[in-house]
Length: 127
Image 1 (tube, rainbow, N blue to C red):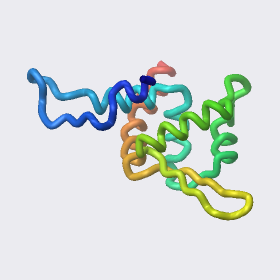
Image 2 (image 1 turned 120 degrees about the vertical axis):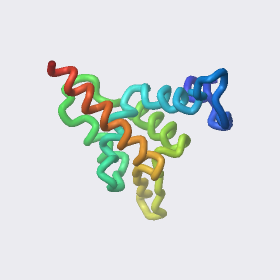
Image 3 (image 1 turned 60 degrees about the vertical axis):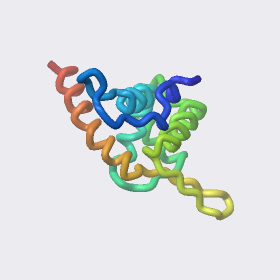
């Protein structure tokens, strides 16, 4: 079983266990956003616009001289984020095919939550 499915989305927590809240859903999402480039992808899409694959790759690579995102990694992250319901993948039936990505409502909520973490890390980094 791969890491993202280590905590399957079919497991639902309905109550506390042993006096502690169930962390299975949180752990599943943390495993996903902890993967390379996931937070950056969510952040780039947080402006509410739909972005094509090529444009997304270019936006992610701005400011990086090294460690640019590979097509394999970008494709894998987009697939995982879409399967988790964080991204929406919209296919337009035209030639050539046009595929656009945007945040779902769930993804927008995650993006808002991540912004505090991003702000905190920037602050700590510059202390």
